[in-house]
Length: 549
Ligand code: ATP
Ligand code: MG
Ligand code: MG
Image (spheres, rainbow, N blue to C red):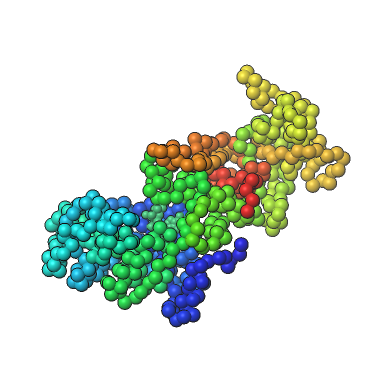
């Protein structure tokens, strides 16, 4: 895949420009501030910003805040932060709610034209009378109200004379249309609810399907790009633009939304995870939110390449979650310092190493990127290795430490296991080894070979660290059984917390610093829970994957 991936929207825009249908390109990213953005939104963000950029156009960030019940300024701020972090700069920053007066006028225009009416039916009655795909709908008994009566009632709806749900304003189109969305859709509802931006100025709010085309037209958006579930709304979108006599005529185009395996991708579900404390907030590193991915350690570059290589098409299948891992490995491969961390420590005493002596060994920071230079790491009589790098009775082909076996310590010496100590429960708690000074790393020693290379951390200078290892949040299921929800498939092992050690030169690691721990994987310094002298490392991704691109 390359930067010029399949993108049918690019083809459309090129055609529009060539044919003179448009002379500029304006797109928008229109989140509803009712939750944090997830990686699906990142796809929409990249498509909108990158396509406009390609044609020297503009992109607005517009908050689609027409449903006050679920919206909040906390979400507005989080969304702005995420868009910036992903690397994009909006041209205009707008709130749909700033257009409420204009939308009201356009609704009144529809009333004047005999194209909208106030309906007193309940929501249930309206739904019931809408009909089905095979059955036409039934006209409302209030459908033929006069322009005067509708004007009066709509004005009184706005003035707050009626309670929630007592009346709605509907477009008057065609109750037998083959497209159910055209069967007199509701365009205004009553909701006595405080709005995060307009406060208590309004008690009627426009419905999304009516508001969205108007917002696009008001901002002179040329290409309104959305996801496939809005395809059936396009005729109504065009109807609103035409009948509301908007001077600018935007057009809607739909692409397939991004779905990823082993996670959920809807703000409603993500909010449920937060509210029910399944996770530790919207930015929990297991969440597919942009803020969760950032805290986990994913980079904007990796997310953008991932999304770009998926292309823009009409398909909406599931993408394997391991595909994103491929991109973060690629991005960090040459950038992240390669260092050593022991996540399940086991002490090793090097019995022939002088007590009290510390020497400093040279270690390259990234074997694949010499520009990253070298560092000095301490080595002394006591070190830590991983518990599973020692076995009392190893199986065949186990090349790590066991009694009588010799291994290489990365950047240091060969050590040979002579003895071990068990506690009262029979657990091995300490290994006794001897080292061979001749075998020092970098000395050119060729006297004999060993098959295993272990990572380690010097015990005297080790920095205590917490490691948080992650697995997917949601388990693979073929299909949800009747009455089940995604909450029934939460992976009970999605997080494992371990207490270990890292090299002493990492005691000053800063929030969001990223490292490759030799033989483990890529880790990010957690920005919330790390404290000076005791960093917390989030596993971003392990080193190897079974997944092939
Ligand atoms: P959710 O159902 O997750 O709340 P939404 O579509 O309601 O998503 P919006 O805030 O309305 O969320 O979305 C803003 C923009 O992002 C819309 O244009 C929407 O189509 C797009 N978008 C949302 N989810 C995805 C996805 N999974 N893949 C691609 N684009 C998406
Ligand atoms: Mg939504
Ligand atoms: Mg939605």
